[in-house]
Length: 131
Image (cartoon, rainbow, N blue to C red; front, side, top):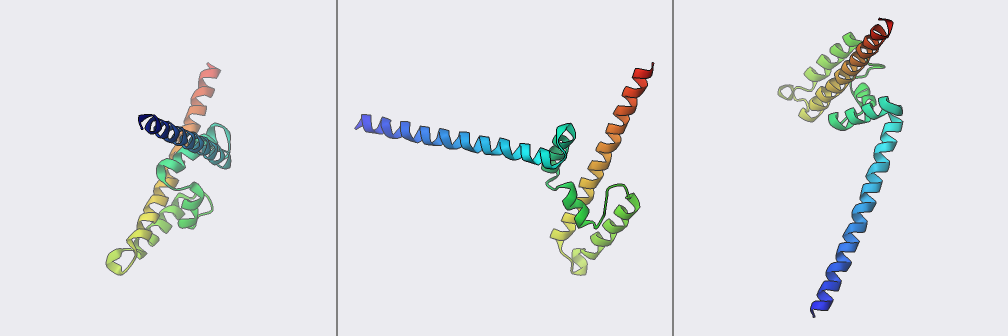
């Protein structure tokens, strides 16, 4: 009886181990694809990480706020305020949509901050190389 119990436990452990390894490989492949879709290289990896942390891609954020790019800060603020107020729960709006609008603005602001930080790093490197 103990022999069969040990065999069952061993077989179960092998099945779980194989399933875990397969899931790990799939997750690794998915993260690499996400990085490639985001532009590849260091920038793609950075964007994929930001997408994961923010829970929203940059493209999705731009669509929600009806923007063509992240550069137009005035349009970002104007569209954000309009959509946020239009979806105010006290005015019969949707809290879910309102929260999506907030997350979209946060995602775009995060991208702007990353772009600003990268520009500063490049400028710092350039200044150090010149001296």
